[in-house]
Image (cartoon, protein in one colour):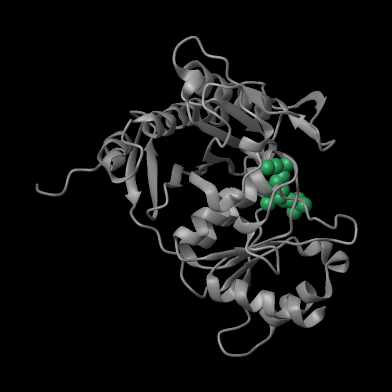
Length: 336
Ligand code: AHM
Ligand code: MG
């Protein structure tokens, strides 16, 4: 039997190390740490149904939402992996009010990277056995190396991202990431705990046939979004489009990346900035989408050019196939 050997994520990281300005290996080590933490979280997510770790922990996060136990666990696992291995100088997590400064014993206070992470997105889906995910975003710090990490290191525009990615804990577990040279996806072989390159150089179709939005909120949507939804439903050309909404951003985004489609979480009359967080969810997804040839905006502006003002800032989100996002923007502009 002949055939090309499968490439593991570990091999891929080493091979790509020389492609970028990060040949010190620091970014490679950081991505390796995320890879390891994701396997531990995967193990916990997989046994959630039997391990009595589902349920509410009784605490609320900064947005006033109830955290579930697995969120807390995933948060702890990623923070431990990143801080113990001394690969970052700071971490901001959707689950923590403030950023964490990594005080290190070795040289790590000189580490130049910060990580922003949503450790377990879509956690309301856990207790019904629907896929959840981890989203991460990596920046170079802007303050002086060696000094304590500052808020300004985290409040950077998305265009400054060095790397971003997500893990989807689905029917298969996958890690999909970019370091600014295209997007690659790796599927976990759970029997040996190894990720293999399975989706090389992912490109999102320019035009898809899927729209993903929580239509239950229709009445609260801006007119431009209502008009775009009607457009998606019209019988004309290649429409109507198919509606698919899991309610787990990573899964909805992943499907649309592979098949083509648009994901929208718009502003609503109750939440003028929508629900999703610019730093933990929208910027990393925008980096991935653009690297795959797609597009992301808040309905008017490119997501990655928005100047962040606070860690937990929310923003309306239109993301996916470029032609579909452009069309939705046209409806937004017309409705103003
Ligand atoms: P979370 O970070 O609290 O899990 O919320 C984000 C999730 C996304 O995964 C998903 O796309 C969205 O919330 C669904 O929200 P809604 O139930 O309002 O449609
Ligand atoms: Mg989230």
